[in-house]
Length: 183
Image (cartoon, rainbow, N blue to C red; front, side, top):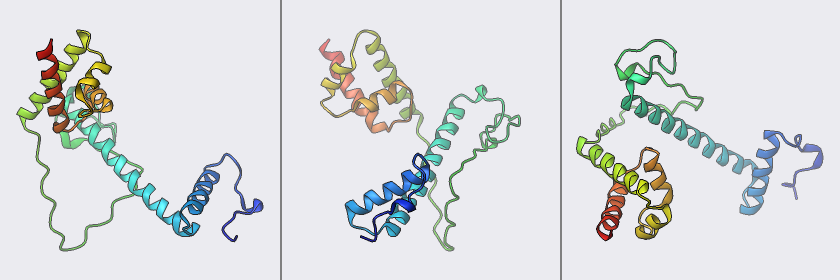
């Protein structure tokens, strides 16, 4: 019973420390892992997840800026005026810096830019979806026709113009084709 927290060792109720310590204790009991080891694993997950979310957020901000550069007059990181060069944007994050690359690591391959045709296909598919929705297509009937190939969250992301993989747009386009041929 050495892993049981004594009442005198408990942090003040309602504090972040109390919440973290309670989570570690509960997961430790459920998994049979020592609390000190589990605390490091959970901290590792938190740090990796924070870095991932910060990178994703920065990528989305940059994409928004690239699609509508005239809407931004200053750099989000510095507040200084910017010109039309995309690389002038500086994004800040509270996430820890990624580990340094080991010497002799092969360079990362360049990320391919989406083709103009793919972007046009996505735009046309979204416009078809919006038009069908305006004409009375309900989310329920759309999901019924999709038979699980496209999820509601993915459709809502497309409607809201969030970044969605091309494969999802292709699946949605097939569903829209089916709906339009039946009407």
